[in-house]
Length: 99
Ligand SMILES: [Zn+2]
Image (cartoon, rainbow, N blue to C red):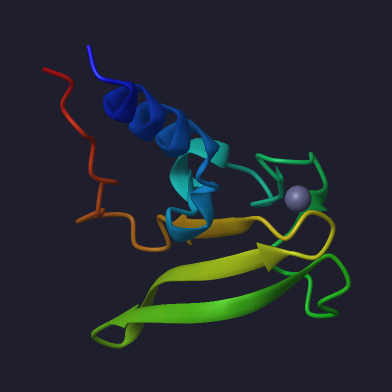
C-alpha cells in the first residue's frame, strides 16, 4: 500500500465530468422531447430556439440527417449530448467495463 496510489484514487473522484457529457436519448424520452437537465433539473426543450436555458455546442450530422446535438445547460454549465434523432442505428454510449 503506497500513499501515492491512494492519492491517485482521490484525484479520479474529484475530476469533474466535463469531458464526458450526459447522454440523453430522445427515443427514451418520447412526447415533446423535453427533458430535465441531468445535473440541475432545468427543463430543456430541443425546440427552444431562444437559448435562454441552453446553448448548442455541437451538432452531429449523419448523411443528411441530424444525428446528435451537444448542449450546454446555462444554469449549471453541464454538457448534455442528445441523441436518438434517427430512429435507427443509434450510437450507444460507450460503457466502461469494471473488472
Ligand atoms: Zn443544468
